[in-house]
Image 1 (spheres, one colour):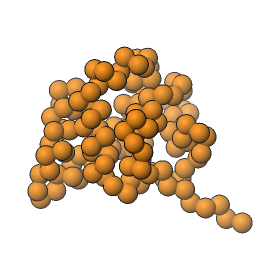
Image 2 (tube, rainbow, N blue to C red; image 1 turned 120 degrees about the vertical axis):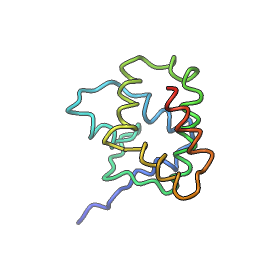
Image 3 (cartoon, rainbow, N blue to C red; image 1 turned 135 degrees about the horizontal axis):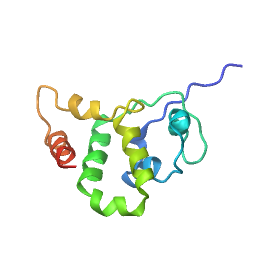
Image 4 (cartoon, rainbow, N blue to C red; image 1 turned 90 degrees about the vertical axis):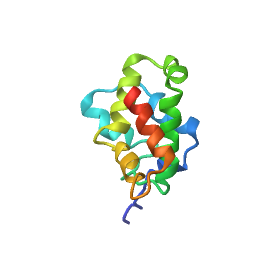
Length: 120
């Protein structure tokens, strides 16, 4: 029997679940990092991460960057470092969504997220 392909849809998460998914984790070695973040907090393993709604993820990132000063103190510096490298790094490449959302018509939420990220 062939296992079913499982997609991790980060856009299906609420903002709180999105933050927890990335930040509320034990810190792991670089070698474990990729597989670790393709496993959710309940232990479910995923094959890929393709959002059904990039706009929702841009909204989550905008809120995260805008409220980072209130959110970050809940986590250790290594957890913050690991989380940021996970969603802005090669694993999820969520930064691409910011630029994809710009498209021919600049959407205010994407521009705001890019501005806040620049300040960050």
